[in-house]
Length: 484
Image (cartoon, rainbow, N blue to C red; front, side):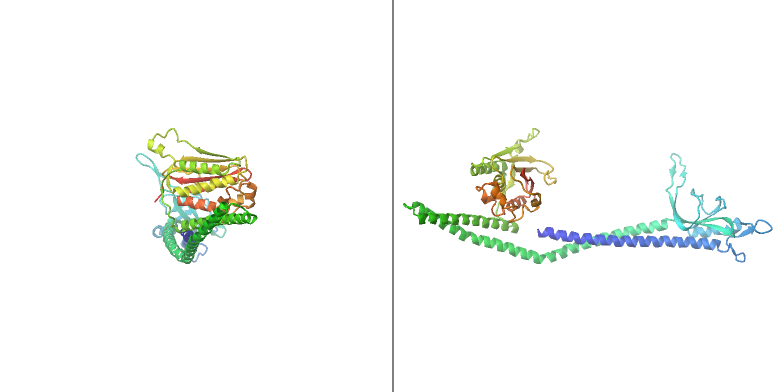
């Protein structure tokens, strides 16, 4: 129990830290990526400013050299050779490409080896474009180049109201994607190492936090076991003395009114000591199961023979209630031909006494809450592969026992707490069921808790399904062989 709590605490520590680290890493990634994009856009804008800065100032040593078209000098054009003759080498060194377009959008000059197959439109804020390259001709198969990603700014160049053309500046996008990918790898490695470190630290710290609770719980279990053990002797002694006194009364030749009253009181004391003795034994059993000091030994147990004994005993306890109690053993499939397996088809490794107690509790409960004329059915079947109850997959076979009744049923809100110690759904159900022969199996509220402890001790699973007014089904699934 404490290991499960410790594991849950460590998982919560790790999960919360992982979420916080992911949020932090996402913020860092977005900040770095945005910074890289802004830096590229600033570079492109700066190149555009340098190239066109003196277009509107005729007294400046212009980067874009323009000349008048007519004598009135009211129309101009760009001198491409004079303007761009020295720009090619410079932009190649900076990995920046320039393109000059006419006012109609026709490409007139470019530093690119081949023109880009993308439309022209003015954009001064920067945009990312995807360029699909042409296929390369091979001797056998044409192979397309991978698409090219570029960051671009397109500036319209004007003198007065005259549009001289369009200048488009392109920058490779890999200078954003490459460091971004590397940042993702670095952040992932960092987060992974941090999560592992936090997981180990959380496991250590949760263990430290659980130590005082574990020690207190161990002391409480030890106290319960010691107290239960110490109470067994005086209870047994009281019960023995009561039985001796009753035997003396039986030997008396004449019974008086006083002796009859005396006998009734002794009978009541006997019943109470029997109930108290059973309660002490149940507490001692649960305390030993919790502390792991159970003395039960495991051996090969034929579950079919065990159920036959339990059903036969229970049939003797309720002769007047007219309840049909049956045992159904599901035969092996016809495809199974192994003589050794067929001989031990219903045999498992377990503790005989504990299994008897388990199925006695379940069958006694079913009989107790089933009205006269009802039916209780016990079914034993061997299943292979997937456990249909828990959904788990096992390498060895499983033995599944179903105890079904047509009794009063259990409310749906009570099912989650049904296996809690000292929990009883409704004490009035006992009186409505109308059976006192099996009250010892249900009087303390520990019967189902003991059943669950026995099932868990055998590495099995117990499940309950119930509908009020229709009946209840307990399903116990036990592995044939225990895992070490």
